[in-house]
Length: 220
View 1 (cartoon, rainbow, N blue to C red):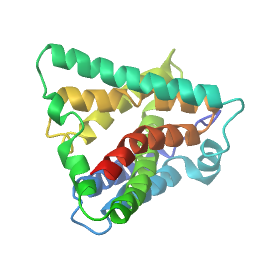
View 2 (cartoon, rainbow, N blue to C red):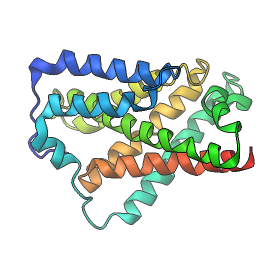
View 3 (tube, rainbow, N blue to C red):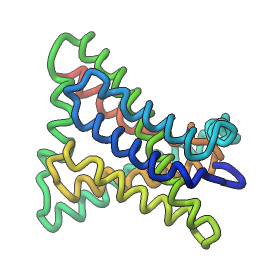
């Protein structure tokens, strides 16, 4: 993350409109540009919010050593996800049969194996876009909390709530499932802080989704 974060306040409304457009594009998959809505809106939003030099800074190579950190935060993501799902299950607030999101994976169960594998490519682009969009969300919140103790953590938690809301449609408005998806990305932001690079969040998010999705694609 930028060592001395500055933002262009005059573009705050614009970048949040871009966030909404990116999320709307990802939700409405009937448009041919839907898979590219989040990366385009996220990247443009970042450039408008913090400028090219700071975008370059947050996308710099990860600070070494990073492998153990990436693995640790990756595993922590699953601990949080299944912990929240377990709590929701105890209260009977959601169906485990739909915890993987039928709407989200049904598209990968049709066509030949090659076609199904190729469908993961635009999904990978969308995942990268989600992290760019969430960088816009987190940084715009963190700017106003950066002088507070635990400001990054607070901004990240608020971002998790926003991320959970973004997945309501994909998971049939199952609140506990969406909360698990939202807060399981908290380690992504912690990894970003620990490695001083947004790349770590992108890599962990890709691994988190694709290591589950690819077996589904192969066995469909």
